[in-house]
Each structure stands twice: as C-alpha cells, then as structure tokens.
Image (cartoon, rainbow, N blue to C red; front, side):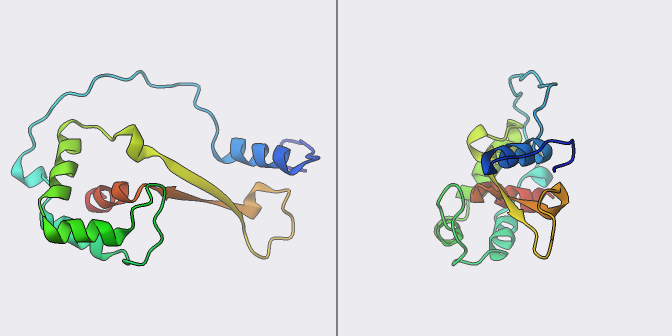
Length: 142
C-alpha cells in the first residue's frame, strides 16, 4: 500500500503514483508575460572569472547530462574565448528569461538503500539531471 490507500498491481501504476506524489501537477499555471529587456549594471554582469570558478567545480570526465555536452567541452570553449559563456548568461539575465530548452530536467526516482518497505514514498528519492549549461549560471547566481 502507498499512502492514500491505493493498491498497486503493476510496476507502471506504482511508478505513476510515485510521480504524482513527487511531481504533482500545478493547477495554478502562471500566464506568461513577454520579458522586458533590462540593461545590466557592471556589478550585475557575470564575469569570465566567475564562469571559470564555476567550471572548476566539475570534472572533465563527468558524464554529459541531457544536452550530451560534457563539461570538458564547455571548459575548452571558455579557455579558447572567455567572453562567450558570460555573454550568453548576461543576455539571459538582461531579458530575465530562462529558455525552455535549458529548463529540461530528467527526474530519476531511485529506491533508497536499506528501506524494507518500498510501498512508502519515503523509501525513494529523486535526483534531477539538468542541462549542463544551466548549472553554470545557477552555481554563480546562487
């Protein structure tokens, strides 16, 4: 039994129940407004040094995520021309947008080790695989 009293007779019904528990639908969808361009002040712009620091956090050998571009490629781009990645990030910040392409995330539901009862949601955890490019500004801004 899963919380809520639903008996699951198949793996697919259990899967659907877990997804609904961890990723419920949003009934209050926000209306999209066209973004307004904001000229960033120098202090608000992402600098090449900040991108360098962010990229150092990840190994060149890390597996590529959804976009299939390894960190080593991004590091190589930044080494060859250290203006490209900051300029892309600053454009996103100027328009106050996060492109839908960069928002794609793959949620993987994994069972926790040493949990005896896998009919309980607490026996699972979710990991999110993001686009690798999205992690660069996220690690700088947060």
